[in-house]
Amino acid sequence: MRHPKQISDLVNCLAKLPGLGPKSATRLALYILKRPADEARSLAKALVAVKEEIHFCSLCHDYTDQDPCPRCADPKRDRAQICVVESPADLMVIESSGLYRGLYHVLGGVLNPLNGIGPEDLNAQDLLDRLQKALDAGEPIREVLLATGGSPEAESTLSYLLDRLRDFPVQITRLARGLPVGMDLEYVDGNTLKQALEFRREAREPL
Image (cartoon, rainbow, N blue to C red):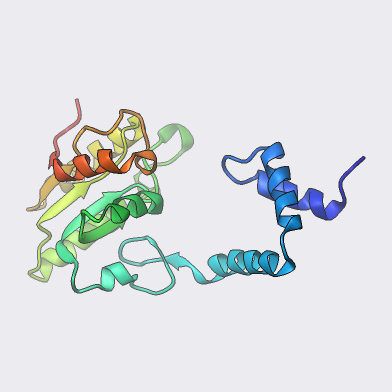
């Protein structure tokens, strides 16, 4: 016997989410169905709100509901440091550690020629423009922390950034290699991330 169309439609939508297969999506749909109607309306309202009201910060490219985002606009943050991450998820991981108080720059991914992702598809040029603008204003950036993951694509992206950044008078560092090779930053535990941040080192061309 088939499910009612409304349930099937919800299951199909949920199954498109990462980590949810048809069985997990079905369990979640039935859970939502058992909850009070007000909870379902709140969920639907939140989903619509994030799509209609959230956009990218024009400076760091993190998700925000205002421009510039609160972090970029915060005068208490160290404006001479920029931490470069692959995604907003990575930014959230580093920010939650409480160990970094500078600014951020979200690349929006990593280089992956096999999937057609080249330098023009990332926010790399915007990073260079930020550095040049700060330099022209007499407020040069002191440190660029390349907080990319350990995947081969991330290492290629790091090499590309090192090449583009070499002409800027800025210290370039990267996370200490306590990070597991091949693991994305968002899955790293807090203690490992703490050590990687505290013992970050000068970035050089990967071997």
